[in-house]
Image (cartoon, rainbow, N blue to C red; front, top):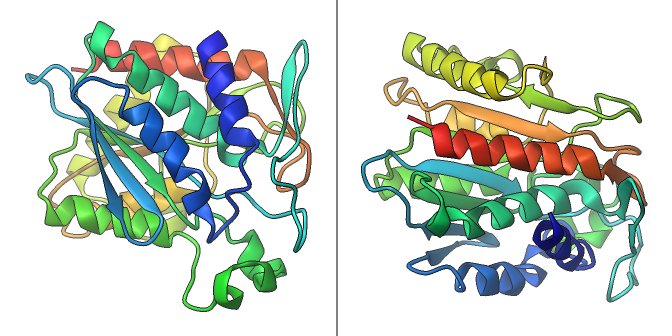
Length: 282
C-alpha cells in the first residue's frame, strides 16, 4: 500500500488536464521501464499502451485507466496540484489519479506473481466536462476533440495489431456512493451504448463478474459511464471477439470538483481484488 500511495501522490500532483495528458506520460513511462521485459508504444495523440510480461500460457488481460484530469483551476493552474493524505482518505484531483496508480502498482508485481501477460491502456480525453463547460481551457479551444476518443484510438490500435485479449478491466472512480465507502463493478456497457452484445460477450462478461464477486461478494453491481463503454463497443464491433469490458471503481466524493476524496480502504480494497483476480484468472 505504501508504494501505491507514493505512486498516487506522484500522479495526482501533475496538471495532466484533458488534451494535456502528455504531461503525465514521462512519469508513467519511467515506471514501465523499471519492469523487466516491459515495453510501451505511444498511440497518437496522447495515449499509451504498455506490455508487461506474464505467464505465457495465459491469455493477456488489459488494465485501463484514463489520463486526463478536469481543469478546475483556470488558465493559470499551479505547477503542482494540491494533494492531501489523511488518516482515512486522500484528497486532490483523484479522478483518475487513483486508477493510474492502481494499475501501475499492480504491474510492478507481475514479475513476482503468476499473472497473465498484461496490457496497460492509458487513454486521453475520457472526460467530457471540459468540452461542455470550458472548451477554452483545452488545446485549440477543444476543436477536433471528443470524449472517449482515447479509448477508441487504443481499441483500433489493438485490433490492427491483432492483440488477443481475455478481458479489459478499467479502473476509475465512482460517484455512486455519495460520500460513503464502497466499491462498484460496472459490467453492462450495452445498457448505455445501445449495442447488442453477442451471446459470447454476455457469457464471458458474466464469468468475469462472478470471478470478482467470489473474491469480494460485497462489491456493488451497478453501471455508469466511462471508458469501459468505448472499449466494450470498439473491441466487439464484429460481434465475434466476445471480449468482456468491465470497470472496477472505488467511491469518490465530491465528484468532478476540486478536492475530490477517496477512502484509503477503498483504494486498498480495489487493489487487493485486482491482484487476487489476476492471480486466479484462468
